[in-house]
Image (cartoon, rainbow, N blue to C red; front, side, top):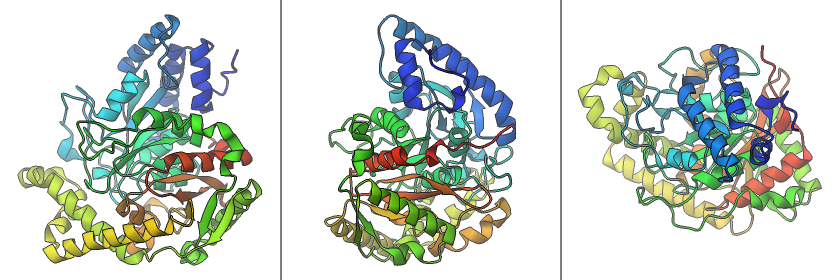
Length: 468
């Protein structure tokens, strides 16, 4: 029998194996996770809403199906959670804003339907910053608390997804990323997050921040666990005409090569780009990580990353303009319902047509330059942020330096390429350190293989916070 004493931190893939064989009960799993949320999350505030009754109903259904031989796959009977911007029929979805506090959809997002079809148990809805903007504090209750060092920002906008995954309050979570909102909380909380190629995952039934930049992806405690979730949510959706029609490989099966998954991987390194204004602890952790990659067979290649300052500024122009367009009708009738998201919407209204046109031209320019770079290398490493951690009271100052803050994240939303973020160390006060690997379009399998190989050779993804 499997040892369940460390159940909250079991790998999703191990839980799935136990559920499949009958060694683990979906009902017992769900009851245990709900009890842990009740005991721990009063301090962490990662959940906006816990849907315990429906979760237990899903768990009972999953258990009955599995016992009767109708096993659906690795998420069947496994408790996970979703960011509170995915529509779920009959359940409020707030988008982290009082402007939408009474919103209830009569249909579910495609990704939610796919999770349910895979037999996943949905524990609840996770906290996010208002409007899915990393710079905006949430409007409901206390902000999520960093699980490792109290007082520090746990990232955003998928803050609850990062905290709950790191703290063992779900086995994986869904997040979204427009300019870093999967990558920031993944790095800061020491978990693994995949920002897919734009269009790889349907956005139907998902609150929008910026249509041409938004991506939906998994956050988990390992690359293997992220792959298991991604296998379920990736793929074309007729309800989302922007979703890609490319065939979807079996991402979890692609990891079977283990540590050999990094053999002959061409890693393009631009130290000037990595080191520009970046905290020395992050630089050291990336150097150490690349040494590990060399040890397990990867090849380092010197490259020059295309300039990112102009495209970073352009990313904000596009994001704010598209945000204003999405909220315009609701904002005109109920501006009082919005918090600091009002500032973003108002800025979006004020850009000139030539500024907006220039931003889209810069987007295409950077996308083309990056595509050319990937003719010579497979992946490019980078920090996610130039600093290790920030206290909540430092955020306004940090977000005021857009070019510095966003140069490692926003450009890759502009290019629409996938990146994977994973832990690579710990700083002097115990904050997790992480890095990202950036790949060309539809290279998620290669990115997952690389991160998985690294995690077979290092223990950082196994580190856990100490919680009462």
